[in-house]
Image (cartoon, rainbow, N blue to C red; front, top):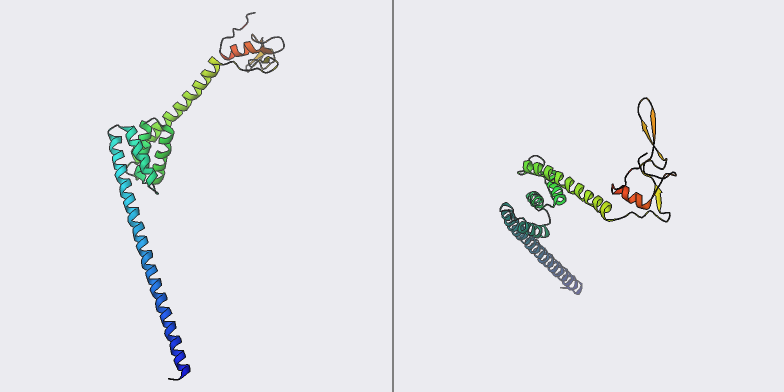
Length: 217
């Protein structure tokens, strides 16, 4: 074998060796990726199974009327799942209703109905409970507003500013109260304000509390 042929053979041998090593490395890398993907899938399945067990336990507490215990387990499940099962949305919404967390209940029951429409296993119950939760939420908001108004009018005086007086809200500072009907208008002197259409700060706060008596002519 000539020198040039020998060099060519060695070069070819080296190239083939490199190709074989490269192919072997790629094969090992692919196998390693397959193993990682398989482990990730197994881990995901395991997490789903664990979450399912937690949800099932939470539902049992819910059905037994132990709503606080159920709430803790539902929250635990929500922290572990990446994609919330539709039935979890329903049961969490139902449990929230019994805990009087009406805003939370409305949110999750609405989500269940959005996901399942009328074909879900709990669609009928979700729709009925959602209506109750919405009514309860409106009542709760109304009561809070009423409580705020009662606290304001009962326990505090409104600051009237540096002048110590305000424009009379009854007659809007006109000193007369106008009553209109389809035939005529009648004018009555405002029984609360002074001759300039103002109320003192003290009288204004009494008016807000319903304690200011009207003057009699």
